[in-house]
Length: 206
Image (cartoon, rainbow, N blue to C red; front, side, top):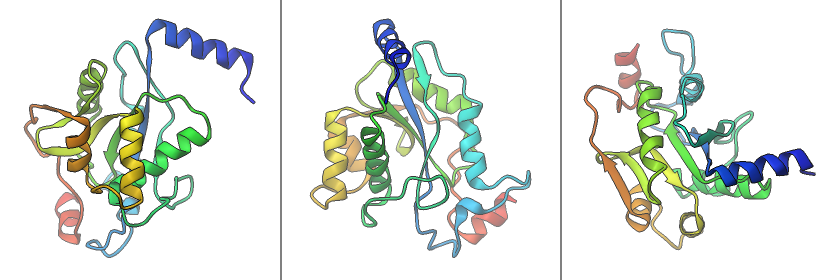
């Protein structure tokens, strides 16, 4: 049962125009190219890829007017949100996250999404997505890299995710962004978009 204090805090937040974004780590893939669960692969620091992805949000200083919710992890693992469908890729995971938030009546304006296999990302890059996302009702990403992203969680987005999960819409980030509209920020220099998908990727990283 929601307390009176919590309802008052929520009302005050809305009056101040503060948005709530839910940080999401996509970690529900099959890791078929890696041959084992890549989320549990260890970096030289001793952290796993999953630890590293979650720590990005702990180091993120949200811009004024934005409140970050607790991090949610997409995937069938301890503390994770299991995919409700296995055939929709990342969109299946995002649909399951959206349904989880709805089920628990957690107010959320947007998802701030990172994949578990991009350990070179930085909190500063995620902050850029947040700053741009606060001003538009569209998805935000860097160039043609669809992840990480800012994803507004309005009715249009929820409806598309539901359709993709049920097989009635194309289950790809590109199709979702085409439907919602997308602001493509200039792509930063460097190896921030390095993916760890195959054993050789992991060896190169370590």
